[in-house]
Image (cartoon, rainbow, N blue to C red; front, side):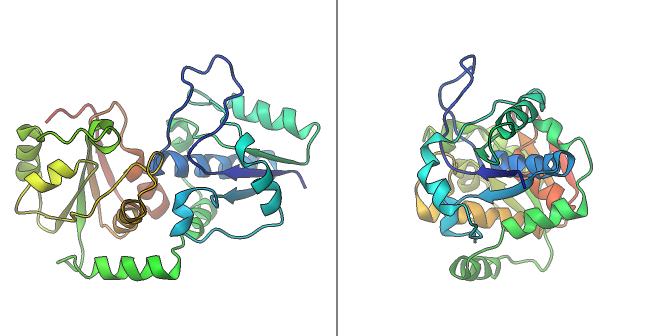
Length: 274
């Protein structure tokens, strides 16, 4: 059977000369949107799908199932192409069709675009994604320990995606006071504050949050920070609702994918400036 091995890692080659950047990075939202999109496409095009993240640092904490092509992946790991398909899906389908004309097994990655979420997720897609997010035993112990710190039996999440200037570029200047005022004015009972800004979490008071280091998993090799970033993904999966404020023109992919997988109501706000 024709097989796509969808490989999650931190860097790829770019076969399209007109790609508008040479290198970039993919956060958890990007990676999981890519998996969600390729799973949906596999049902349309009829190919076997294997997701392999054994060469990404998240594999330290999540179980990655072994498969018969592990050696093949290891031998070709430096040649995995990123297929640019932000605007529409056709570059991906064309690449797969072209490669399948001469190969039975191909490797690739794409993050797709937000159009991947146009259709309501099927129950089998949700279950596939949940299986992908299976903690290793030591990480499950960490999750259980951290969850015991939550002071509520049920909780909602208020989330702020303030941009990569702090998370990726390590610009740790004092957070805009307008952001802090917004948190305080909009917090609700049993809210947990999550943010890509450690500065915001330190400055906001009278709201529960975690102070452990987080990171962008597309750029970091800091194991404790990757572990806690993944933990916050699982924390979101248990929330009754999510309210998210994004500095960008799109809703944070980090919270969107969890909303899709676990059917959690998401209220998303874009172009947030405090």
